[in-house]
Amino acid sequence: TYFDCTLDQGLNFSFRVAFTAYKSGGGLVRFGKTNFWDAREDGMYFTHGTEAPKLEYKWAPV
Image (cartoon, rainbow, N blue to C red; front, side, top):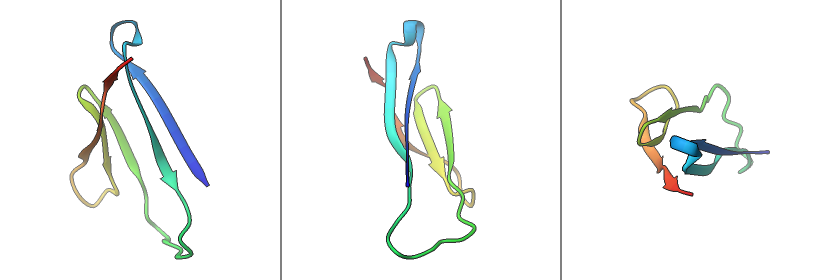
């Protein structure tokens, strides 16, 4: 299972970020693990909720 995301922001949606928000697999089941994504002014931040979100993807001009 994949969840791919594309988000646009800025004046006339002039910036974009595209990424895979979730990918299952590997044969190991990880129960209780949650993915948190946060769209901010400088890009997309990620955490599993146990630590501070980290910048993963910066907005790119379209």
